[in-house]
Amino acid sequence: MAIIDYLGIEQAIQTIFENDSRTSTINGRASTIVVEDSDFVSEPRCPYIGIFLDSYETTEDTITIGGSTPYLTTLGIDIQIYEFALENLEGARLRDIAFGKVKEVLKDNKTLNGNVLYYKFGDGKFDNMRNEEGIGFFKGISLRIDCEVQE
Image (cartoon, rainbow, N blue to C red; front, side, top):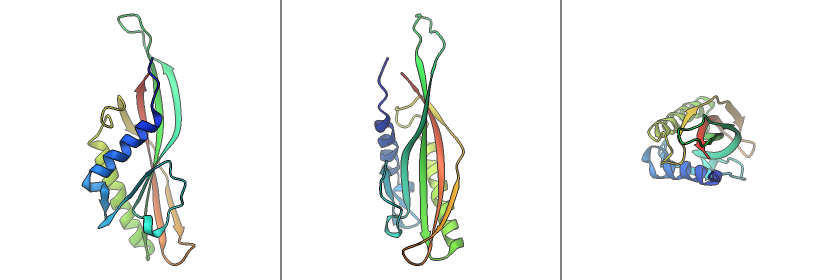
């Protein structure tokens, strides 16, 4: 049974986003792509893609032909995507573009460069907030992916 490198899976997602022109630059600006970020989203850090572990569940898989019983872990990863604009609706438009690009890049990497067996998209939530430091709006969305990893 292998030990799962949870941080390594998050960093693999980060590397995929950094190496793909669709997500390394979004809406004409360089993206901030981080793992387990402790800083708040701010205007200079947008477009922002944050990758966070959310949950896990381990179950026993079916017995294989050789008699071993592997375990499967479903790892929930939350990807936070934020954009900033001076106008509320423009922020929503930029957020939607960023969200679409992140999903397209993920669709092209179903095993996250061999780090998972597969993943599926889960649910997400929209986030809207005013810039408390000045003018403008932050428009965000969370994208959940549930990854299957064999131990």
